[in-house]
Amino acid sequence: MSLSFITSYIALWALVVFQGLVALALLRQLAELRAIAGRAPLPNEDSLPVGTSAPDFEGFDCRDGRPMSSRDVDGGEAVMLFFSACPTCIQLADDLRRVTAADLPPIMAFCVGGEGPCSNILEKLPPHVPLLLKDSDEIARRYQISSSPTAVVVDSRRVIRGHGHPGNIKELKKLVADSLAESSSPAHRQVSYPTVAN
Image 1 (spheres, helix red, strand yellow):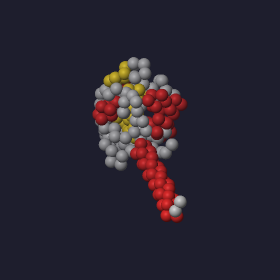
Image 2 (image 1 turned 90 degrees about the vertical axis):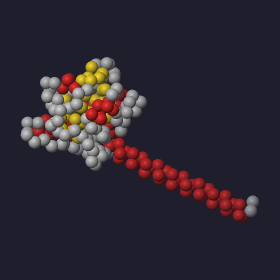
Image 3 (image 1 turned 120 degrees about the vertical axis):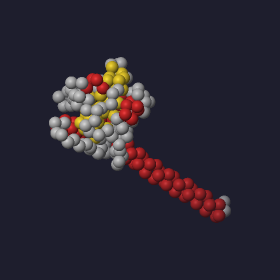
Image 4 (image 1 turned 30 degrees about the vertical axis):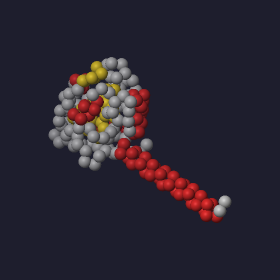
């Protein structure tokens, strides 16, 4: 073998290794951006103002066919949780297994994206929390939900008392407590908690 052949052969392999490292670095950056996009609310997101009536909806729990409706809130508070397939959503759904009726008002869950992308939410969510899949995208649009997870706190008259982006159970409990404490006040403000990395 000639010296020029060996030199070009080594240079070619050096180029291949360099391109591989560049590709790995780009994939890592993409994964980090995707994780950030999945857990962080959009900076100027739209949402229904606190104090407005919660839009009507009806459907069925995708697991056992139990009816779900906005009328289920009548006479008591409720938390509406909007999920997607994001990692923070999946972790929060799993953490709801540790929540009792004394901790939070009844929870109704919605997963945007359909049965395939929501399979992890379906698997992690405890059985006592009804999950609506069909028409969840339309319901999220009515509530002007643009990121997930999003919690909407509704009072017994189906009025929105607070909303935010809890990243864990502690933040969800604080959001609910703050929202319902303010419901007796004439002025309401949005309570929003940014999600945290899992």
